[in-house]
Length: 93
Image (cartoon, rainbow, N blue to C red; front, side, top):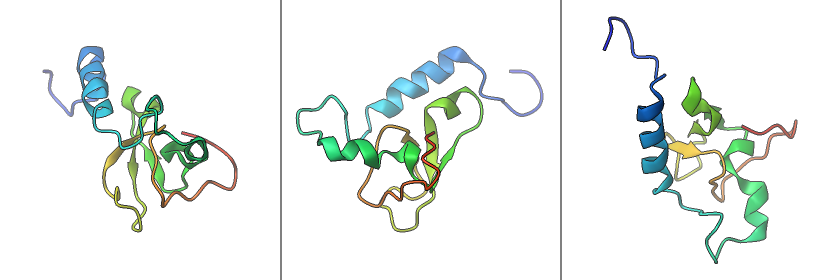
């Protein structure tokens, strides 16, 4: 590791994080009990979802919704919760 702060640009490390964190989703889109209405309740479309920086920020962000059980946790953009507040500008991610 070089001097200075780590920038998160190690593809091998990022791939490992991505795979590890995916195992913790509460809404697997491929699960038989995934409901169609959840598609519009994904974290990446919530006004309280803040993307991480760097490559991980393409898929991952932090929930900042005080009313969500996931407040303060890193979330996958396609995961979701019942407290989602859809962005008024219809942006995602």
